[in-house]
Structure formats: C-alpha cells, structure tokens
Amino acid sequence: MNRSTDTSPQAEERLVTSLTRACELAKLEIPGFLWLTHEGDRNLSPGNLHVVWIFDTQASLAHALETGLGKRMYELTAQAFTEAAIAVRAAEAHVSFDTEEACQRHNNGNWQARLSMLRLSH
Picture 1 (cartoon, rainbow, N blue to C red):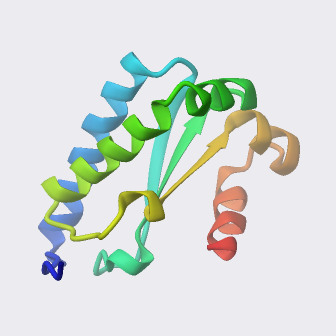
Picture 2 (cartoon, rainbow, N blue to C red):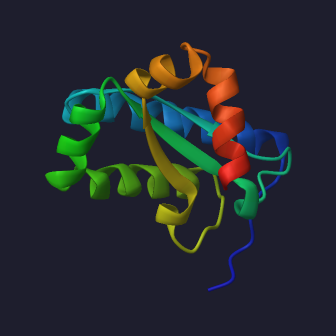
C-alpha cells in the first residue's frame, strides 16, 4: 500500500498532538510508562521517523511487554501516525522502548546522549 505522507509543518504539529494524546492514554493504561519522544527528519520521512516509549524501570518495561501491552503501544503509535497523515507500513518498525533506569545507569541521566546513541543503532 503506497499512501502519501504529509510533510508540511502542520504535519509535525499534528504528530506532536497525536503522540501527546497517546502518551496521556498510555500513562493511564500501562503501569510504569512515563513518557515518549519522537525523532525524525524535518520532512517526517517515514523511513527516518522513530518513537521511543520510556518506562521507569526495566522490570516495568518487561512486565508491559510480557503482558501484551507492547501491542497497545504499537496501536497508539500507528493511530498517531494516521492522525498526522504519516504513512507507514508497520508501526512496530518505528518504535523502540527504553527506561529511565538504563539512561541513569549508562548515560548518567543524559537523555540527549542516550537518544543520540540509540539513533546510531537504527
């Protein structure tokens, strides 16, 4: 399925609004989930768009994934992309998970450094 993607400045605003809504829902539904962030190029090219879901601890993240809540996070991400008119084939390819615990341990709490490191691994 080849759908076009809106790359206008309004698309970024719609994406932020949609991801904020997804984040607020997830905070209510998913124990240990804290926040999310997204990264991508200025044109919101689907190939460069990535959403990172952040949990408090590795144990909370593992529990969420073991109990099927990963599927819910993929659904919320896909819904946000759709609302922002960003066409992706599979939201799962644009999602990763991390924890405050790991950032503190490996990056002294510096999320900018951690996200840069994660960006290199994609």
